[in-house]
Image 1 (cartoon, rainbow over the protein chains, first blue to last red):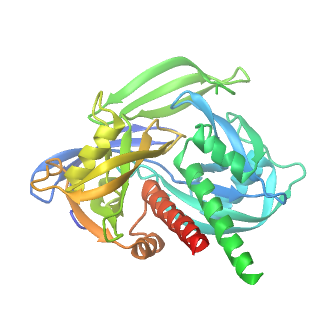
Image 2: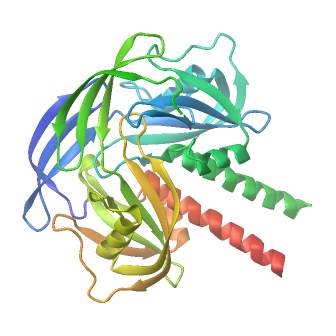
Length: 190
Length: 190
């Protein structure tokens, strides 16, 4: 889909960091005028919706410097160069939570901030969760704490903004929808 | 919530643009070591879940330079300095779609990219939609096209990635959940 395409007239890469790259592009608009677009390039990321054998959601608490507080999120992490998203998902699940799983089902992918960034997040659901003995730990500069909470507790966390990011809000809503559909299917059987 | 707080040791503002600011912070980690955080400051944004009198979702198609294609999104836009999110929501709904509404209900807010950005999106649901005669148009450098589609069509768009961003994926799931809950309530009444 290329409707209203904006052609690049000039591109300046202003910063190449460890994770993000900033470039400012002068673009030609559909009406022939020019405008400036400030764009963040990002390697992409994964997140994992994981529910343990007791029906509890696997969450990690992490400090987020961008807005100076910690929040509860589903396990997530950046893609390493050349790494398949499903491999990243399995790795991050183990490193952040100590859990492994039998299967990772890709649910969907979405851009997080289409107005200024190309970060694409791939959402997976983990099936058949189990604890890994001697699991690999998180990265050296990453401090995360595991929480295992019910869906009702997660919905309370959404309401009081301990859960406060798009992918985790999506995940909580996804699990509520799945539960209702499952209950409907069961009540039709009975 | 300040658990695992990372204290700023040094901050360099590397770019101040029209929309985003890039700053690189040296932080002290909970273990006393230091690390670098690349952070994008953003004014925040709103998005509006809007369904017209025929039950169709109000969507806008827009070219997104960050990933060089156009996608279908719910109406959205950045906060202007000092502007209340509900005012931004009403303004963007009119400018992007020509619709007004009787009420805007705040559903929730979420950070879009907690790993590197402080962009907070406020999600509203519009109630009592009506067409505005001589509506204000979009910004001069913004080209958007209105689409009005059923929930089923929106779910197809999610599947084939014409809908491809987090807030719109959230909105489609929200509307499916609301429809199921409404149908359940109606079937209990009958």
